[in-house]
Length: 316
Image (cartoon, rainbow, N blue to C red; front, side):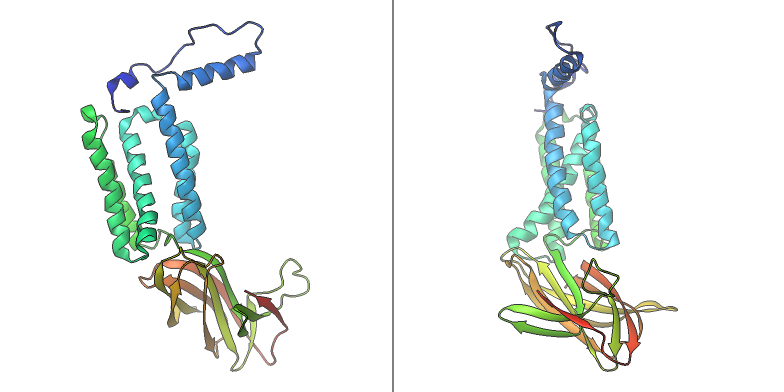
């Protein structure tokens, strides 16, 4: 219905009745603005702004919670920008190309989340298929509207850009959400919980109990413990990619260890890997899906020590 020409006959509306003289100016202005937005010719654009605002708000929360490395933050920043811009775009939605583009973008991202959730898999094929489904929905609705106002072509461009961004690891692997990634020296499972011995922070770092600047004795194990939330029914495999920074060659992968994940636990599915005899320097562990999409990245440093550093026990 929003494509019918009758909805774009007027750009502005004047109130048919004059407000009472005793009404304060600010209240009269508020009533006038509300009347203009809800008056018949402008109502569809106000509803579009309201619907897009709700969609962008939900998508921002979903993708923000799944973003934990700088490439994924780009998508969250884009959604945040669109969410703010939507507050000023009500009159711009009369340009139907913009309306179709934003609808197609929201539909694709919504399908990107919903399809893996329903199927219980985060394989790459479901991302590409859900992107095509979202774009197909926009094209189908465009074909069903009279007069075909605006252009639907930008939706195809957006779909292609999303696929490129996914390949570049810029799309967070929704619906997976990082809960915890921590480093420890000892790990024990007691009554269904994990007890981790972690290095204590220096006394002046009073706002946190543990530190990621590790003093590691010769032969001492270092554990990476991660907790990742996944919806009930989703089954996949996660990997810990241990990388050491070399000043000449950059980040070098020293091991890539996998473990299974089964969704449904509110506090996240827990898994761990470990390494011994870590050389000193900068380290990071990336939590990745089996198709190498990054869930989280945790950085830490290793320094050689003659004796074990003071430790505190944390329960996860």
